[in-house]
Amino acid sequence: MRRPLIIAPSILAADFGRLADEAARAEAEGGDWLHVDVMDGHFVPNLTVGPDVVRALRRATSLPLDVHLMVDRPDKFAPAFIEAGADRVSIHIESPCNVAATLEAIRAAGRSPGIVLNPGTPLKAIQPHLDRVKLVLMMTVNPGFGGQAFMDPVLEKISQLAALRDEKNLDFDIQVDGGVSENTVGKCAAAGANVMVAGVALFRAQDMAEAIAALRRACNPA
Image (cartoon, rainbow, N blue to C red; front, side, top):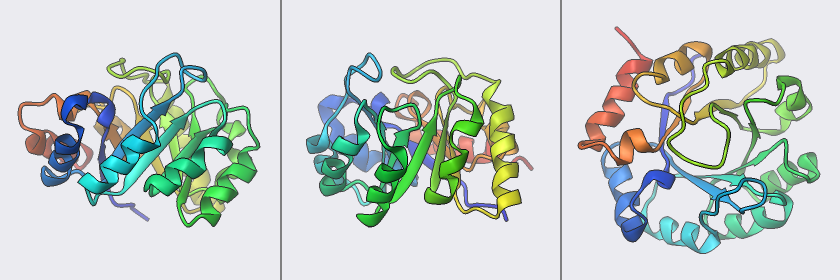
């Protein structure tokens, strides 16, 4: 079954001085979700946003808020982001927590749980959790900073994941994040991904609507 293509602008590349306007722009220009990278300065070296920013984004847009927790204790922090208005919450398999219990807590709160795999982590690490999630995020860069180059070797893991999903009759979207642009997004779609997170390619484009349309065209070549 072909899954709907979803374009998720990432606020990591937005103008933080006018974040509400940027969220509204992402919606008006054709984004499907708004991707929010949360970094704690421990799990990854960078720091970004907390629940109050997600709460402000919730007021600024009706787009689903797709929160990616790059934190040491997602079990501790997920409830605050859910309360702030997150629709989807994804946690890293590499995080030091009880992954199964955290995913179940997100689901029990009425949100869509997701699991994230870093480029260097084998696919088998997430296999025990695939029946618990609605989203698998395959990082196509090492997490922590925006604007990195796309890592092509991850494409094979995306293909393997898509095949495993079909084989086991599982129900989850496959998301990619990192170095996603008009030049790389088609390869992701061909491998089996259907949720494309893009930051610099969208928020720093002269025309975001056209940049989003270009990503859609690249995923669905004539």
